[in-house]
Image (cartoon, rainbow, N blue to C red; front, side, top):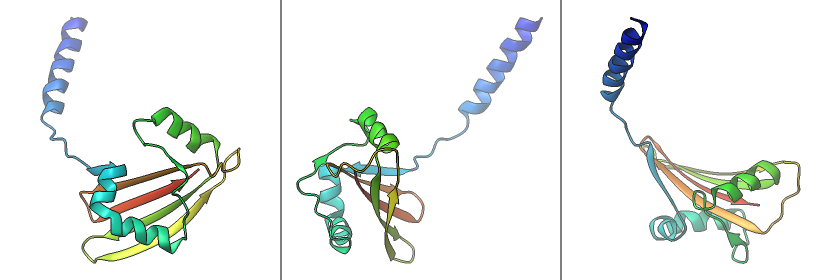
Length: 128
């Protein structure tokens, strides 16, 4: 009886949850795709904070995920954030320093964009 009850609960929950529509949160892009789509915005962020990133090694968010996570967890880094509010066309640019156990290497850069399906598009440059 208990097995039958458990089986029916699993069956009902699978049917119920399969009816929930999944919605994509937005578009994520980096590297060449980012330069093609938003080169002006990226350059504005680079110019505002006078970043010299051309000689830094580029890392990818997902393809180098373990290395990316290690850098985030262990090394201090600075994030430069460009936010476009789509409905008002307002742009904000700010920087944040994240202090970790090890000092910043000033060797790696990661540039990503999350174009949300809401009101914001965020470009993030992180220097490790």
